[in-house]
Image 1 (cartoon, protein in one colour):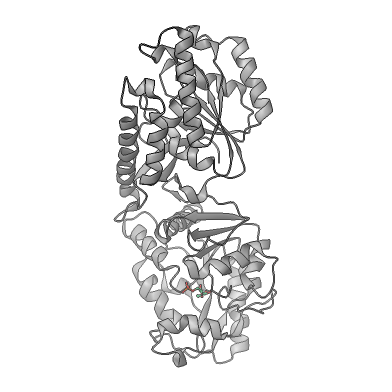
Image 2 (cartoon, rainbow, N blue to C red):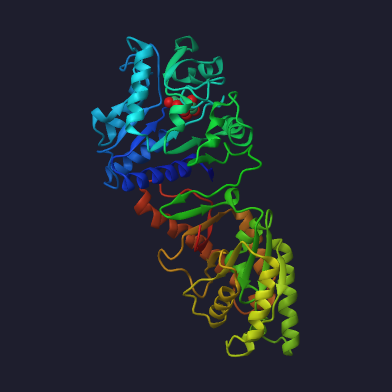
Length: 484
Ligand code: F6R
């Protein structure tokens, strides 16, 4: 079970749109189960845009809708038939004969349900997209529904009638029964995506994901499905306490925010010089340190960069004192390594490697930050070589950029978005390195890069995402993660 949390409905829907187009490129004649309601509206709009710009095609797919109100004709403005045609099908290249929506007026309900179930069974649904009711329903499988249910007539609960009254002139007009696929029908889908947005869904999301499965929350049966992804916005995820979150992925870029960072991990940051960590990733490190054990490994003393610092020993003292202060501010644990290659023309002696290897054995990191592959600065390049030679193979590698060597186009796959407030902390951490600011305004450089990254990533994604490109916080730090 994977839980993706995005800052808002828009970004979350984009993630789902990409999952759907990926499914279509793998299998253009896929079969889908589809929902109605307010949750998928943005998704349907994004998919229309993708079809409009020729990025995907629905011409070969088959769709089955989850449900329909009993007693409403297909022309009725509140019917799910009308909803689907008005909001989606009329705007994409789907074949009318490939669309199946349960009838709201079947002649013989029992035999109609049986037939609908058989047609779905035959098509073998590749991907089911679901919304979640505030009472934990999926489709119209209301609380109390048998987990083994197949397509059936359901009595709507007072809470669903109340929730859906917003689409009708009055509560009295809301039908009291519906035809819906069953929980078993949904579970037979090869892959499932559940979307939930807004505070009103937070309790249902919590009960679905973190409580023992029970008919009180019909969606909790989904816990046993082998290939299921929940895609939530921040508000819907707000009551989850045990679940790990993953970031949404937009055009191949993982969009991290404070919401969806790794937790309970051991993290090492190989900082070639004492100030590289703060400049390249001060905002991310500060956020990670809240829920992880983060070590800043200060690889070299960087003493050559102190002007008017007196003896070498004195300059080392100045830089190490500065980084201790900075690391305290960021909430990391600082280890100064004083590697010899710095004063050895970048030749890596065995004693440096031995030291790092034994440290890695002790820490056993899950994530390691290293300078990126093409960073030409000699101390950065040697730091990377040394780190890769010492790290256990299963470590997830997060390469970072520095002002001396920014990532070139598409050489990164992750972005951490952050606020003005966090930028202030980052700047304070950089300003702990007074000896360096005396030479160069690294604080200004870091501020400009983070803002430049926000602007240019939006532009990069614009060509792929279209109109409303990217809505993030004002700053980004970029990374290239070499495994998921
Ligand atoms: C409708 C359906 C329902 C809705 C759920 C959430 O086809 O399957 O389960 O997904 O009631 O509705 P909204 O999205 O309007 O909050």
